[in-house]
Every structure is written in structure tokens, then in C-alpha cells.
Image (cartoon, rainbow, N blue to C red; front, top):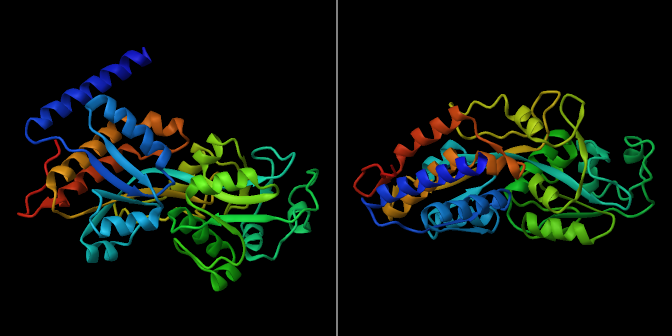
Length: 347
């Protein structure tokens, strides 16, 4: 039944694209940016290509590079896990819209420690990356984890080497829970790290932690799951130690008012079940399009994604956007126009 339904949906998508293609020549699409959503973007692109024959070429280069590439108009869309404020978007002549939500998790490579077993607080995490806590058997960690056999070994912190929306979410959270972190380091897609070795992309950090004993890093939850890494529990704003999951990500996003603005930062939100480092990931496009056919195909792709991509996203540990938010997103696309001021047609 599921296979038949999927085939029908893909067939409908293909028929819809053929009808649309009668009005304009189908275009392949290029995008670049955040590594946070790269696994689900790759899955969506593969299935969309099967359904329509159109290629979505996405480069996982980090949010900072994605922002630079859309600013320079070298791609049809940019991708960033750091939302831009409405004022910044207005100055750039761009729009942004969210695609999925997910969580950033701390991951460790400690012999004998299983996924979800180690407990950390935000202040302890900050102190590790400040270089103040340097051993796994430090009292600040062992007091949170009675019964765990933590080694008398130096902690090897790993962080992102590139401009990263994942880093923005991580450092935004640390800035909220640690006054010392906020004062000395602060938040951003790139910061002056006090300690740690750098890996490029979520892929690079995952690989680095995987081969470096006694290390700790931070990655999007999908990467932790795919690479069978040991993620930690984190204490949230309500003082509860929680595991990362769809439900805990949804709990963190429950209070977001997407109808007011797409600029939503979801870190350290209240709620006993809320995961403390939750974020959405965003697409950036120019309001005035030099290549309206490419823009139309980009929007056609994301229209297909919102209709057909939720199960794929959930299977990869992402949280799809609610139906009401999808409706607001598609309504916002009327701002994307060609040089004559005519809205780009994508239906």
C-alpha cells in the first residue's frame, strides 16, 4: 500500500511538472550552504529527480558560504541555519523561508559510553569549550553522572572550522546559559574559539570525533544517528535532562510565531520536554530574479518538497514544518518577481 501510494504521488508530481514545463523550459537548479540539512536535501533532490528528471545540485559548504554565494548570485538559492533579521533581508533584497527543523547535539567518543548515556549541562558544555574543564573525570561532570566510569583522560574538543549555522545555534545557546561565554566568545557563524580542533561541515566534525578518542563535538542529530555516534543528554531551561528526538525538537518550537516573521531562533526555549539546541534551517532567494525560469523551478522543487517530503525528513530525524507554516511560506513567494515586477510563476 505504501509503495503504491508513493508511486502515485511521484506520478502526480511528474505529471504536474510536465504541465508546468509546457509553459517554460525546465531548468536544473543550483543551491549551496548549510550542512545541517544536507542529508534531507540530498534525499529530496534524488526523489525529485526520479519524479521529474530535473536535477537539484546542492553543495554542502556551510551557512556562511551559502550566504556569500546567494549574495553574489552564483546560485539559485542559498541555505543557512542562521536566520537573517527582517531588516537585513530588506537591505539585501532577499526573502527567507524555513524548510525543516532539527537539533544540534553534543557527541562524544569515550570508550564504554553509549548514545544518550552521558549527561551535561549548558554551563559544563561552555566550560569545556572555554578550556576550564579539561578532564572527563572532572567533578563538574562526574557529579552529573554517578555510576558512569569516566576516564582520567584529557578532553579533546572539536568544533567547526568553517562559517556555520550549526555553530550559530550552538554558540547562541552557550551565550544564553553562560555569562562568561557570552562575554569572552559570544555567538555567530564563526567565533574565536578558546580551544579545540576544527572540522569542516557537520561531516568533518562527525569524522573527526569518530576517530579521536576522548573527544567531544557538536553536530546535527541526523549526522549523529547516521554515524552511530554517542550523543549526550542536555539539561534544558526547565532543569530537565532530555534526549534529542522529534518530540523534543517540536516542544522547543511550540512557541514560535511563524505567521509574524520567519526570523525565529529556537534555542533554550521553555518547556519540560524542549531540546535546548533546536533550530530551523532556511532558504534564501532574491526578490528580483535575473533568471526567473531558474527561480520558478526552485520554487517548484520546494512546493513538491512541502507536499511529498515530510516522511523523508522524519526518517532522517528532522521535523517537517507544520501545514499552517507551509501555507504562509507559499504565500510569501509572491514577493519573488522577475525584472518587470511580475511574480515568478511556479504553478
